[in-house]
Amino acid sequence: MPRLHALETIDVTALRVGMFVHLDLGWLSHPFPLSSFRITSEDQIATIRSLGLREVRWSATQSDLPKPEAAADQAPAAPTIEIELPRPAPLGHQEALARQREALALCERQFAEAARECKRATDLVASAPQDAAAKANELARALLEKMLGEHDLCIRLLGEAAGDKASTHSLNVAIISMLMARAFGMGEADMQDLGVGALMHDIGKLELPDRVRHREDHFTPAEARFYEEHVGHGVAQARRMGLTPGATLVIAQHHEHADGTGFPLKLNTDRMTALARIVALVNRYDNLCNPNLAARALTPHEAVSLLFAQWRSRFDTAILGAFIKMMGVYPPGSTVQLTDDRFAMVVAVNSSRPLKPRVLVHEAGVPRDDALILDLEKSDGIGIRRSLRPQQLPEATRQYLSPRPRVTYFFEPVRDTGEPT
Image (tube, rainbow, N blue to C red; front, top):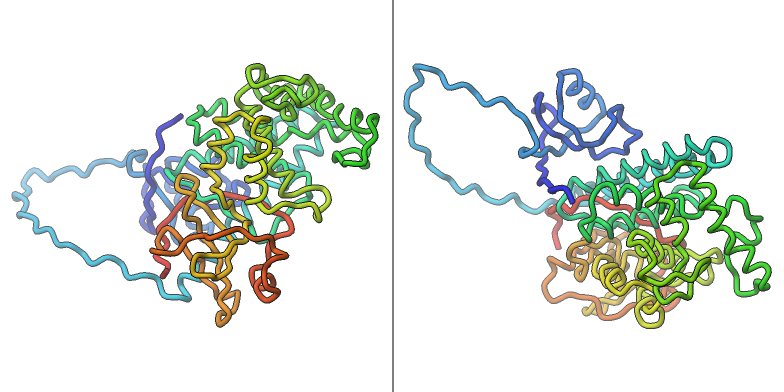
């Protein structure tokens, strides 16, 4: 996997040619081909300033800045005196709230843009398969570029899920699968194949009637076989699109199981690709959290528990372990009770340190819109005691936390927000 570079924040007025910058905007919100690039002209600086950003992030190690020339008659430098500056004070409540809302709004905006692009790609599969492939590759590459620029990424629960069910499902699976590949240290080519395969894994359902696009318990054997045919249809579409073998195998094997009980070929772990084994697990997790019938939805904690306790033989052991390690025992979207008896909802986890997530706590005296996110990693003595279904929460708490009817995720760089804890 490519080396990751630490990024610092700089005011847009201080930008210079040669700086390697990262724009925290959706890839459709700026005119540059990528969100991370080296500035090569003053025109690019003017364009960045026109985007309305006050600050951008940049990498000193990836920048190519000219070194200042020393004057010939320059006097010897005076000895320097090191002064320890005071650490910045924690943000005030209103400033912390503003940053909190701004970060969530950015994630939701980027997810919405990505969901629209995913739907456009899917809509082109039948009429313009090669254009559909180009769009899917472009979207996967944009996600990949954003993932490779940070040391730690935070997996964030979204407040609003923009997009139709099919697109949000495909995007959820792609994002979590690619983050898994990142955790395994996979190379860019494999992550690109994984992203495209995950985004397009259900394209075979386009040829099925609506009534059999989602498996139900009441299906007759004939209807179940009809449903399972979507995998073969998907492989045929992938070939028409000209997808790579790696992406095509993801589509072909996303319903296979490690123990050979999947379909259509009943492959076991040894005959599945690593990329397909990742998508098979993440696809199942998302279907448990976001089933076709909302009444059957499990909480993210329940879904993880079920995968580990009852279905672990169906999935690659190393991949299942890495998934739980990345998402945490209480993934974003889980409703919980803390060790101090307060109720909360997990809203974000650091994918590298998920045991202490960030939670939205029910505080009776604080309006929900003014509630700060509590970072359990910085809160000594406070942890999660147990998980609860939303129906088990007191009515006032359930209305306050507003558990999501659909669990959707995006990712953002982990930052020290300076929020009071």
